[in-house]
Every structure is written in C-alpha cells, then in structure tokens.
Amino acid sequence: MAKNKPTLFADVVGQNAAKRRMTFYQQCYTKSGMMPNSMIVAQKGGGKTFMAKALGQHLMREGEAKAKPFLEINCASLKNIRQFFNNVVIPHMIDKDITILFDEASELPKDMEMGLLTILNPNKNHRNEFAVDDYVVDFDFRRHTFMFATSEPHKVFHALMDRLDRIDLEEYKNDELGEIVSRNLPDIKFENGLLTNIATVLRGNARAAQKMANNIAIFLKAKRTKKFTNKHWAELKDQLGILPLGLNPIEVQVLRHLSEKKDCSLTHLSAKTGLSKACLQRDFEMYLQKMNLMEITTAGRAITSCGQKYLEGLAE
Image 1 (tube, helix red, strand yellow):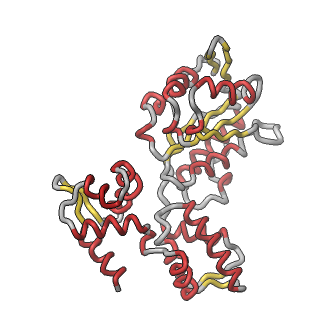
Image 2: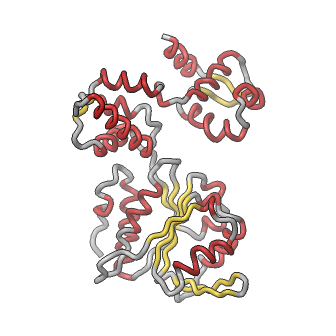
C-alpha cells in the first residue's frame, strides 16, 4: 500500500492527523472494498460534514470509475428506527452500495441507538441481519459504509461509540482560518497582516471563516475593488456589529451582569438574560470560559480580570 499522504484532502486546510487517517481508510477501501465505520467529532462548524463528504467522494474499489452513492441524514429528523427502515434502508440500501453519514449523531432516537448496536456488530463475513416489524434486512458492510458525526460525543450512547472508530478534528488555528478566508477569495488581495486580524473573531470555526469570506466578497463588490484593507475591515466590523474575539451581544451581556454582581448564580443569569440555564451553559458560557473572560467556582460565576479589561476596551 502506498504511503498514506493526505492527497485526497488537498483542498482542506489543517487537520493533518485526521486527513492521514481518513486517507488510510480510503486506501483500505480501494484494496478491500471495506473501511471501519467511524465517528467524526468536532465543534459546530468544525468541518465534520465537509471531511465526511470529501472521504465519501473517493470511496471506490480498484477499477471503478466513480464512488458509491453518498447519503447524508440529519439524525434530528429521525423519529424512530421504523422511519429509518422505511425512508432509508428499504429505498437506498437493499442490494445497493451506499455510504451513509449520520450527522448530529447525538440526536439519534434511543431505539435507533439500540438497533445500531446490533447492526454494527457483524459476523466474520462482515454481515448482519436485523428485523423491524418482521421485515428482515441483510446489512452487508462490504457494500454499506456508515459514518457518524457529532459535536456532542458525551450525548452519544457509550456502547455505540465503542462500535466506531473515533476521529477527532482539531480546532482551527488563526493562521489556518486566515487561509480558509483567503482560499474562498482567490481574486482578493489582503493588506499585510489583515487575515490574522480577521481570524481573531472567527472563534476557531471553519464555517465562520467561510461566512466571513462571503461577507467580504459582498462588501468589496459594492466597493468595486479587489483589495481588502484595514480601513475596509474596520468599516465592515462596524456594519456587521463584529466584536473583539467574535463575542456576541448575549456574551457581552453575561459579562456585564457578572461585573455588577459578584459570585453570580446560574439562576440569576438566566433571569437577567431571559435564557434557559441549559442554553446559557451550552451556547455562551463555554466560550467565555475558554477565552478566560469568566470563571465558575464553588461560590458561583465571576468575571475574570481579562473579562473586566474586555469590557473596558468596549467602552473606549
């Protein structure tokens, strides 16, 4: 087998470890017609679906001219395993080759998780039979490839995780985010150092980088220029309300409440913001902690010195 250079993902910025591993899987499939069923883990907007599709487009055996069909399923749309059989298995899998991506795998219905435990435990011939309402299906992993993706692996049933090869994507560094912006705008010239400045508001997120590239393209089209300067960036930030570090208004509101009340409780923050406790914890507090703007102690939530400096900077 050839040395596993990540050539399949030449258009993917960063993620070298994941690219090497997924290239190895593709090479295995080319030779044997099989690859491990896998779980891709990354933050929202971290490139899970993009990487899965990039691999799926190259799953073909030696001598084949094109990859087998690729089907993406949002697990939040699945009500139960019966719906999965009726809408996916029967029309797309019986006597057919296919790769299926189960996106947002943390949203899998419980009976789907239980069913997958059996389906993903094939015999020595890489096959397994599973029945729903007396309808028996032969799952043949020489023809069927399952990929899963999630940003919340802790919510996926641990026994199901154990059935899958886990691939963790790395958070994007600022230079990589700048490169993503630049690649999406090949005809645009950026003022020296500006891409790094732009990357600081993208929260380590590849999808945010792509969206920012679209915003810059629209802005420059209106300006009728193909050069993006620091002056343009200041204007665009003002028009879009972009804050330092990419914080959103709710996160700034949380910091201001913490600045006013020492050792604030989650209940108090929920009442002040009008958001549920779960929403605050999931969507806002994590990034504030990551950027060392707030901390959670046994006494409650508190703003850090960095958080205070952040608010002071906004007031200037």
